[in-house]
Length: 85
Image (cartoon, rainbow, N blue to C red; front, side, top):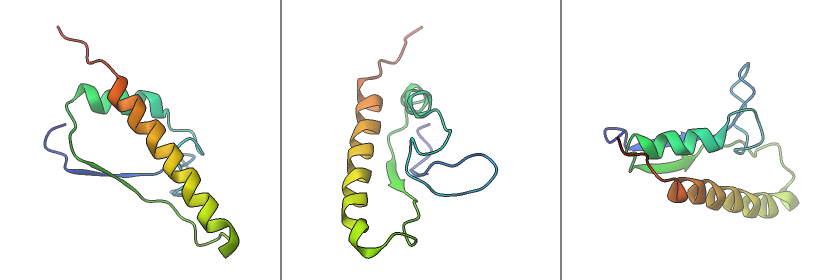
């Protein structure tokens, strides 16, 4: 946990590296964020999502949605209480 400095965050469907926004695939994000907190992760989260297929008019709203998702992920991470032995 503490040795990892940055994670490239994106979702997929296991059979292809599709780089979709978290919660857009089948990764269990609540479990992932809690596990990261449990191991003491303190690095950065960096989106690695594809948007080249979007029409220009949809890019700004899509990015706003990405911010909402990022805030939700951080809320899960920050509110998770690490269980102490």
